[in-house]
Length: 173
Image 1 (cartoon, helix red, strand yellow):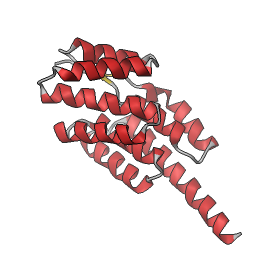
Image 2 (cartoon, one colour):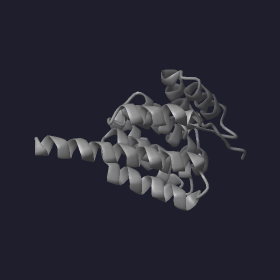
Image 3 (cartoon, one colour):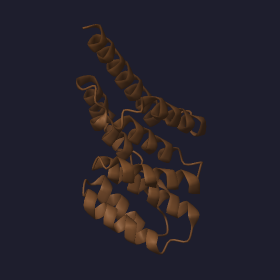
């Protein structure tokens, strides 16, 4: 089964710029999760869903991926679909649904570092930076050379520092 990782976090510059311009991690989390979409090999609906998500057609990508998951019996393909749904829901800032699909993807395949990166985006979007860091580090254990995970780590750490600094400033005023 051939998997092609689609990296919208190749647009990491956008994620880093967003992290620098806003302490809120929602924008960075969106770019971070979009990096986790993958094309699946055998299920055309999952592949079409992934392409739609990458192209920014989020609702269509979610719909196609959900349709592809209905008949999917291969746990690795299902994990890919759930990881992509997680990424799609992050792009919509629907954190609860995103987290549900990330958790399912990781339950089905603990070796997919993109799912950990996506879940880190969910946690960052929720302001749960310790959990986001744990997921990025889990992904790095699987893929230590991943530039995407390295950039996600930098974005999460930066956002965590900014939030901590702002919190201290508010407490001292």
